[in-house]
Length: 216
Picture 1 (cartoon, rainbow, N blue to C red):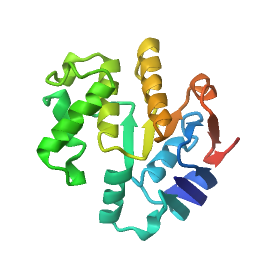
Picture 2: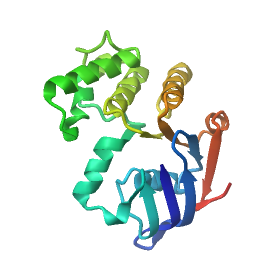
Picture 3: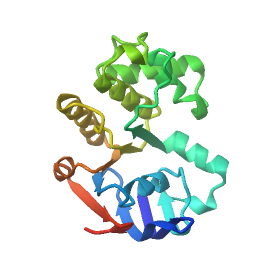
């Protein structure tokens, strides 16, 4: 599903990744763990086609990222990749259902179908009774569940989660992890970026990053 080969990513004089080679197979549940500045979030941006490498090869779902146009990358993200971020990124004045439906804007799905899929995804994360609420009316854990619903409404084969429990209390974080594990059980490839080594230790595979390199 993801293959990085000898990948270097530099921002001016700063090297965020220094020759990384790693593979994630379809259907895996993987943690990428490391301290701040280790390069783990840069790996997520490259795996999610949000950025391009300075050198080396990045392949996602069989596609060589460097060979795709910006339009091609947008299509790949819309059709194959879902994102969950620590900060939720929900539109404040928009209902929960439309926040999720708007995540499907670039898939070519008609508005009615988008809203139907949004309701289905929200029901799947236990928020089917909250369709008309606004984000400010929800707890942090509920907002993160909305973000997960938005990520999976397009039925992606790859889900990338960047510190998905970072802003949550213990109980809410456990519920989010339960949902991510359930998605994995249904066949989705799930990659979780985290600095929480205890969380990472509970997953089937861990990739440890340090100073822009794979440490273990």
